[in-house]
Length: 95
Image (cartoon, rainbow, N blue to C red; front, top):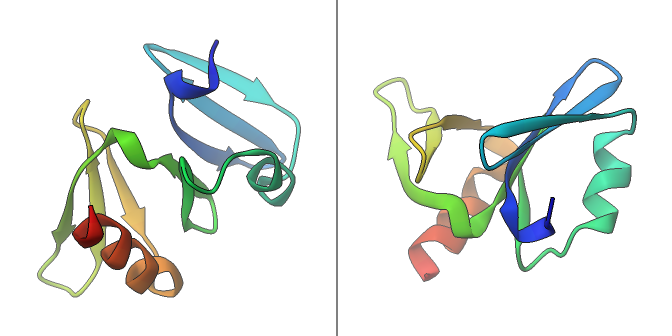
């Protein structure tokens, strides 16, 4: 698996699920550790339990309840937490 093939990463308890192409790989590591190893130009934290490959983002969706979701090119939707919302909006609108 190449780093560029990673679409998103999410937490499952003490494990990280790395979604790349059509596969999911499991690592026993913290989100913070993984985030430090990934390039911030390519990967952004969008939630306390999710990191996304910015090249995989299709659009930012504003929900009626004020929440935001990212829609990835493969159709997957990821929730964006309030603490990351402004950074993600700036990143997406700046592209």
